[in-house]
Image (cartoon, rainbow, N blue to C red; front, side, top):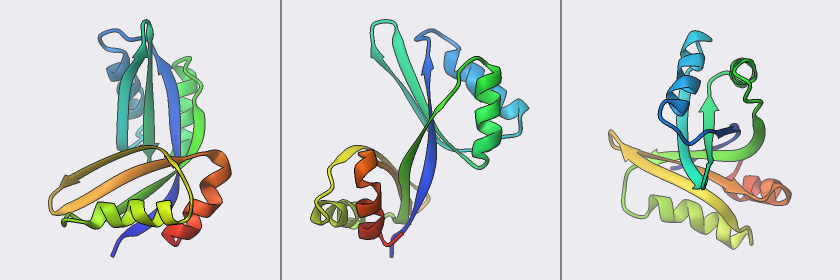
Length: 134
């Protein structure tokens, strides 16, 4: 059975150049922040952003601010379950049946488990939480 929880994801703007993400992760290492999940991508010419789900949001915020990259905090959901056919679909279907549109999701499977991070509009967080049993 899937386990879901509401999380805070930190989002920062990055320069789309070699080493920009490594610099952030180096700051997290120095601050002793464990990163559970991260993803980063270029969003246009000269623009990139990164998202981080960490074990210590406050410490991560301080590390990012010290780098001159004050983060935006967004509510999201972390869901994990056994990596079996149909489990991810079941999670998405619950949110759909609640009438909530997913703005973004990222999922992966490793070691017999799958996990996903799901973003919904700020106004739909409570509905999605209810649908996921959070």
